[in-house]
Amino acid sequence: MKTKILTFSTLFLCFAFLFSQNEPQDYLSSEFHKDRRESVRNLLPKNSVSVFFANPVRNRANDVDYHYHQDPNFYYLTGFREPHAVLLIFSEYQTVGNLTFNEIVFVQERNELMEMWNGKRLGADGIKSKLGFEYAFTTDKFTEIVPDLSIYESVLFFDFKNDVRDDKNNPNDLFSLIEKFKSMANYPSNFNPEKEKYYDVISLAPNESAANVAQVLKSNLRYRPSLKNDRLLEEFQSATNQKKLLEIKQKIALKAAESNLDAIGLIDIMKQLREIKTKDELKLMTKAAKISAIGQVEVMKAMHPELSEMEIQGIHEFVYKKYNVEYEGYPSIVGGGHNGCILHYIENTKMRVGNDLVLMDLGAEYHGYTADVTRTIPADGTFSPEQKAIYDLVYLAQEAGINAAVVGAEFRAPHNAAVEVIKKGLMDLGIIKNPKDYRKFFPHGTSHYVGLDVHDPGTTGPYKSNTIITVEPGIYVQDNSDCDPKWWGIAVRIEDTVLISEDGPINLSVYAPRKSEEIEKLMKKKSPLSNFVLPEIQ
Ligand SMILES: [Mn+2]
Image (cartoon, rainbow, N blue to C red; front, side):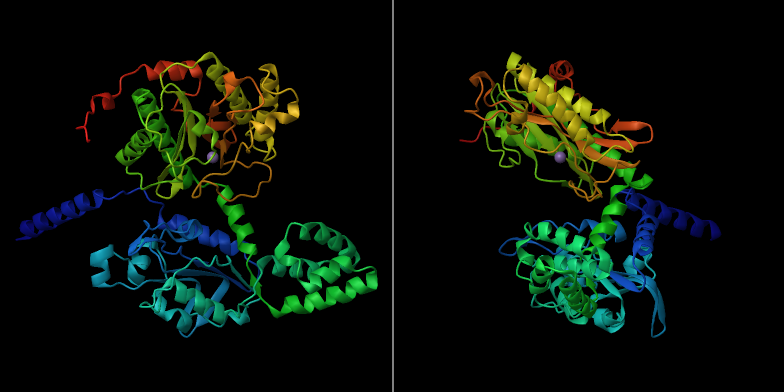
């Protein structure tokens, strides 16, 4: 009997193991998310609460929604991938009834019928057992459990974008959660986060520097039309003497004290945290970049002039799916010839790429983390002399950019390095006569942070170790540009996802060749997709 039980339980364990092996096992751990919440807490001001909402469900058309994508900050702090949820992190422990907590999450309730239609939900118990929360409740308990928000010195949150739909049949959906929060927090209907921030800065400034603050405000107001109509700010920046200045400062301080809402502070906190990737994040980023590069390599082998932009996009994305990538990190850009000059070209409708260059900017998003990789290749396998001249120039600019991506360098260092190379190169090729004109052909920046967002938040301060950025110079010669027509329609961007480390820059997408000779060599290789023939449709 004993053996029987043993066999049975072994069998059960095997099944459980096999079942679990059918789902990815390499998500970030609940310890990771817990540690991130702890880091937020350490950066919060005293006696404050930070409130994070899940992303809204977005409607595609009629009764079909877009594939749900969690808000990156919410995901970073919870690992939770369902909508209609709110997380609160408190600077200190709170006691409510018999509960004592310093973080608490509210999630949508389980519902057998809805789960049959739309998939499993974790519910409050599930987020506790699977994602390591000690205190979790369903959203209907939000107002019951969360204490009065007026007792905190600061209530930190991201301001709302007004793109949340109200599900009239669900009194506990995200829309209702936000409405409840607004009422609990005395959120004014004309709330302006920047105004609140300026009020705080002005009231906290020492009296002797009030005139300087007014000067800064004056120059800032020019770019902030939404603040121009604020009477107090207007009076402060135009005050003609110190007495008047301090009088208005006093008025502003009184106003500032009325509200404890801060919709700017969390932006800065999340920038600081998300800029530096942890060991676990680096693993996922390395994987996302490698998969993106493998997609580029497979396309290089399969490329020929008869392919359409959409087919090329399909090959990249098919390769991603072979590696269980959930999403593209952003809409895939595949531009043949002049389409490459459109920086965010996502239609991808050209039916035949012909003998032009094809610019392909795509990123695989693996477990929330996306890469951002661009290759530009000649559809017929060989760069023409003009294509090669531009391509090799962009390559040299990228090399200079990557080499400048080191710990301690200024955020703009890779861009500045790339610009110098491109300026000189465009002059040498006779495409520009004045170095300043490089901007006509290289109109964007060279680097941005990349992570949970393709344009990830960061401080833009000097580079720190374990930061991941892109290095992506480009040259785009529009038709009818003021240069020899032989250059017209040539568009090249080379972009890699680069880790800045103590040992120097590490190119995470290096698997896809970047040198023109190496690309031509790889393009001679056979692709298994060449034999993939489908029936003709009239
Ligand atoms: Mn990019």
